Length: 76
Image (cartoon, rainbow, N blue to C red; front, side, top):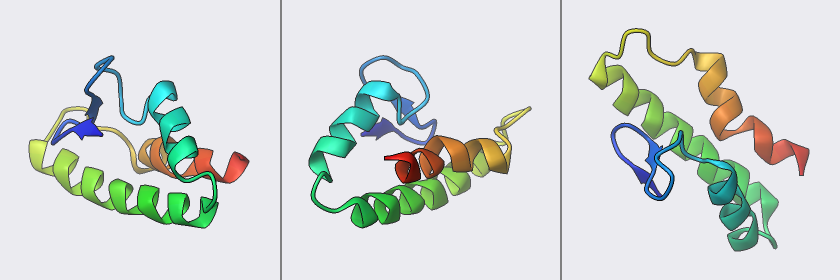
């Protein structure tokens, strides 16, 4: 899971979900990829709210967040 509200990986401190986190998520949701997409869409929603509250300058763009949280789940 990510360190919130920054959404960084607890292990590598990179943007979550990093590659190792994605692999763990794939293992956890290996029998239900739709549930993985739904879970990641919820994370996108939460991350967007958290990152907006932080008022980062520049903050991540919406398309960057979509690719980071959701887009990778459809290429499985």
